[in-house]
Image 1 (cartoon, one colour):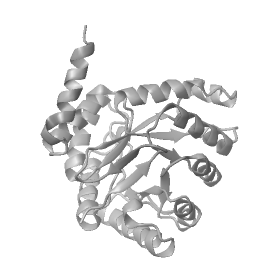
Image 2: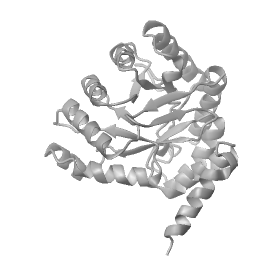
Image 3: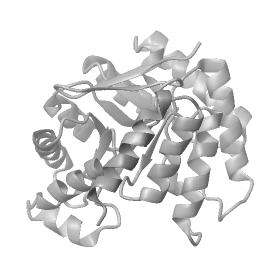
Image 4: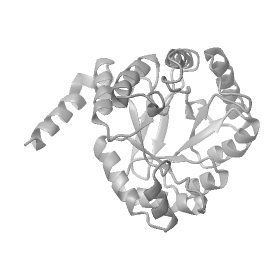
Length: 288
């Protein structure tokens, strides 16, 4: 049995599922590594968010990840304001992304709809801090199978931690199993060429043993390598066949987005090829 995870804005629903089209979670609304954006946010200037939203929507994002982790700011206030702004610009659901519990709560309180929370780990204190918020605000949550001791390099250990997260979330906090989205830990291939095989094995086992939806930071795999878009365009279709149902990625990269859409077609997630054909016709219509 596989599960479906339902996310909503005030007016739109997006469903993650193993028999559904792949869900693109646009990652661009994030100041990490963007010095000018960080300076603008510290000054209270949120105008770059408007451009980022437009670009991710135009690229085909289904959900928008919003992260406001800027040092020397009130992240809770900034995240709440950013979420309100994003919701005034688009009806796409939001993935609320923060490692700061107070910021997550402020973001959830400001959000109109059913959010995806990014993220919780198998650490006892993190689960105790974050899972009650997930339950209180009727959200879904991304869970990473690592604990205070390690980021496991073996699939067996990752599955043990998935089992622990599922047990704690469902029995201690009453969170529905379908609202747990697992990040199977995509690691950089440049550091160790065996890591992707471990991730794919982890994905297959999570799908087969739990039927849970999964997501990952797609760009992690190609970090440090040349021609990163080609690697991403190969990795995601492979991961989709292993059970990955969404990815946090930059929707401004047509090479990767088109590879995902082609994989949807080939996996039978695009009935009669209607989405693929419509996209092709739309591009023809605006071609010079």
